[in-house]
Length: 292
Image 1 (cartoon, one colour):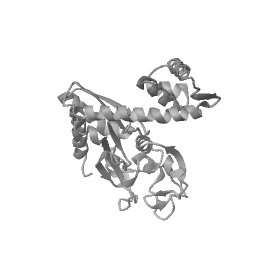
Image 2 (cartoon, one colour):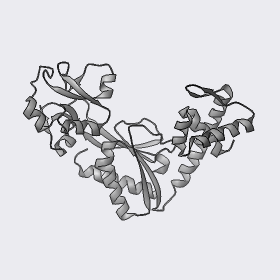
Image 3 (cartoon, rainbow, N blue to C red):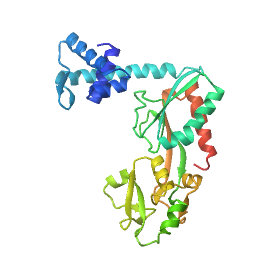
Image 4 (cartoon, rainbow, N blue to C red):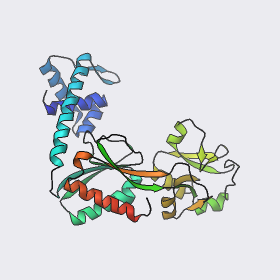
């Protein structure tokens, strides 16, 4: 099995569907199916069980998968070490972040990089999916969770208090909530993962059991847009609420956990010229936004 075959095999082993593997590899499903069939014929072993729910590794497939991951690790290390010596201000830099951070910070940084180094091309992945830097799925990650991997270089870009906000239109219609009434008579916009944790819902420390949840969202961008549209009250970073012209309620209260933003890259790549250029501009844009 060569490295090109191993990439296809690993993609299908992880995605467990032809469609998912094809999407990860940027090829069509027929190509994935054909490559896997050729691999199995050349190896003389069935690597996958074809089931109604997808492709499952056989015992032989599991052994091959472990070996293929070793090939992947070696190939990735080779790329990191050689690219870490690259001083050229040209080529591709892959950045992954959330939609809100992409719009407000990363895209302005990209514009500055392009103005100074037009041969540097940034590939931006905006989603809540956590890509793997060790497998070089991205060169730079900008996230709200701090990773613990010792091979990664981590830098905090921002630390904003979380406040309770509403639009002026919502307050004109519903009035101000009263502390101690658990948001009785008020509409709430809630971050969906907080509900799925099964804990009591709190907004800036106030129990929210008396309120009506009118929307749940899974991204900061959707949260701020829902609040701005007058759907209800919600928690967002103070910096963002003020920037969007929203009204902060109970300004003496904050969520116990602030909103933190971390930039992460692999230790082997931090001195690559084109990656360094992107990192510097991202840091500058965040620093201009205020205290972090």
